[in-house]
Length: 162
Image 1: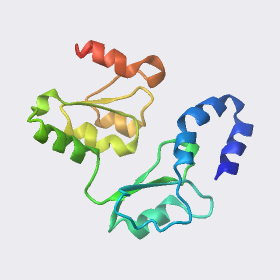
Image 2: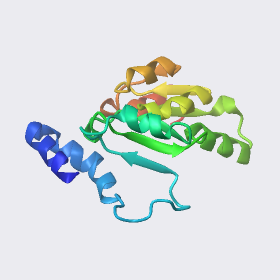
Image 3: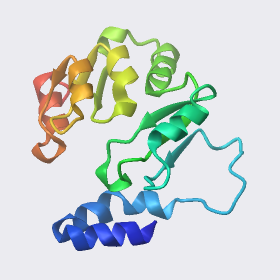
């Protein structure tokens, strides 16, 4: 996998810093050569392969797992996520608001990828980042600035959260 990253560096040298900051922490957590059927795993990220299209993976596992295509270009076009069927970010938010007895009207979520769709639809204020995938922007209540333009900070200011 690292050779694919190094090739990306050669193709786009200005992208090296973004890969080092954004991708390398993921790479360093990769588990290989172990039994992956374990109780402490709830999501698997798979990286793109020219030999195995995303559609093949989705078709094989969609009856048992939630399969989401990735929107991170460094993970390549055939990458994605495999997670527990019916469990997503909105499930976690629901548990938190129930536990703390918070009204849903006070919930905010920010997202940019396809794995954020359910969360943005569930909360009262679903806000897409300016750099979000177009599908995410369509689902969101509104779009803030990109992460490079302090989108979350600007939105927090707008809503008086800070």
